[in-house]
Image 1 (cartoon, rainbow, N blue to C red):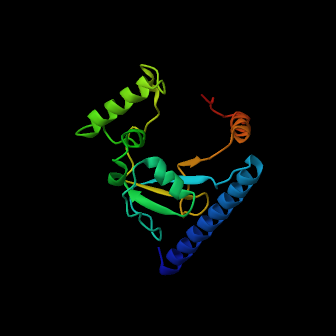
Image 2: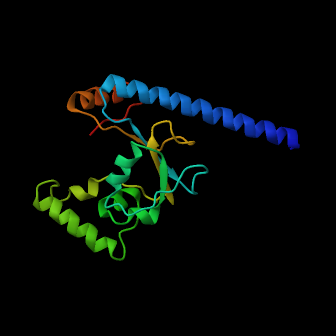
Image 3: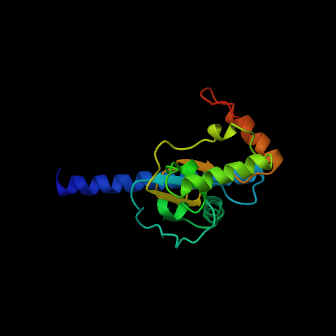
Length: 177
């Protein structure tokens, strides 16, 4: 490939990234308006390497949910090790429950069952990744230079009903449980 072709390829990638980002921002604005969101949708992207141009979070958060809340405010990324303080979040991300994480996870599940938050046996139904990402990027939808793996919505009951209804409207929609 010639130098000219390489430059063209880089420009084409940048244009596609800008188009994707603008489209995601438009979707974010529509979701915020139509669902009556108080916070923007949060983009969560699983990555194999730190993202270029996105600041790293310094860490020191008590839960993965805290990363979600911060992600509604500004873009950042965090390495997988910064997610290990939250045993449920670590499990959902796919961190193997070995070492000290395993007993902490089981204790938390036990407490959740005792409080009636989970029924016995429901822990096996908690969705989780088979393989953990090395890095996770968070930010308002459309603020990151890569596509989202997931998008989180902080919705009120009416917005939740609309989102669930819309999720089931497509031909290839998966059932919402």
